[in-house]
Length: 317
Ligand code: NAD
Image 1 (tube, rainbow, N blue to C red):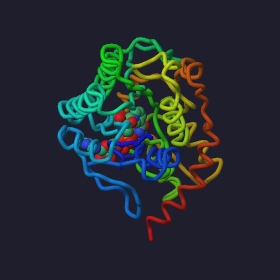
Image 2: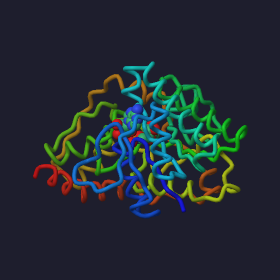
Image 3: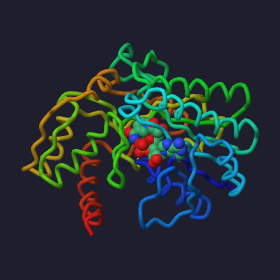
């Protein structure tokens, strides 16, 4: 019987993935952990854990009889640029601590997310295939690319079952994003609902690949459920759901909230976005483990504008 540990469970992806994993394995089979407390009012198995503390990590794994780890703790792209040395340490050493547990046979399976940040300015912009030029120009991308290589190495050398996804920008209404370059796509909904206005930190025409959170959770669970003989990529899979610009997202919101006004004030994050692809080809994931997204731009905007008002109202209480 599987028992899952999520490391970095209090973040944007972690809170939603925890719900998906609890539905998949059962409430008592999922242990959340983070250096930050979980959101208030949430009933869950929770451990304070710094992934850089190897002894404490082993203690938590043994205490709960953990069989799978989902390692989400990381510094995201924009935050990592402000502290490259620490970003490298957290994003790499945390990964080694978890991969070594798998190498030693203490856990059976690892999930580690990569990102479209592994691509860079020399990668073609459109429909980037699984195997493309990867020359990232951010420390976040450099770390993700190195992590991908290490995952594949641990698989090939030591038989470690480690699986990964190159997530595009993730959008959800349950938690705020943690300092990435695509965060505008969540902030814009908050601006639209609170003040009918938003100033985008990316240009109106800056197109990036994106995914709605239910699809990100679905992709993660599908990949982890797939039989090992269906997996052909042991570094990280391309997956995508949609691509849009801030201007197109603003127009989608204006259709539902006509008084909404979006302005554009690009900042340092524009340079990061400029190095990333506009669209991704995820054929290999579709063929290997039947990946198909459920949400495009319109479905995502409808769902966000249905659910986010309730979340904002609950926070005001
Ligand atoms: P986030 O910043 O929202 O959450 C990360 C969590 O890790 C936070 O709760 C933080 O407290 C925790 N953490 C930080 N240092 C820690 C440590 N030393 N020990 C334990 N926990 C620690 O990030 P997210 O958006 O949830 O991203 C999760 C993963 O997905 C990351 O690896 C990220 O690179 C990847 N990813 C995210 C996106 C996105 O758009 N959100 C896109 C591509 C890839």
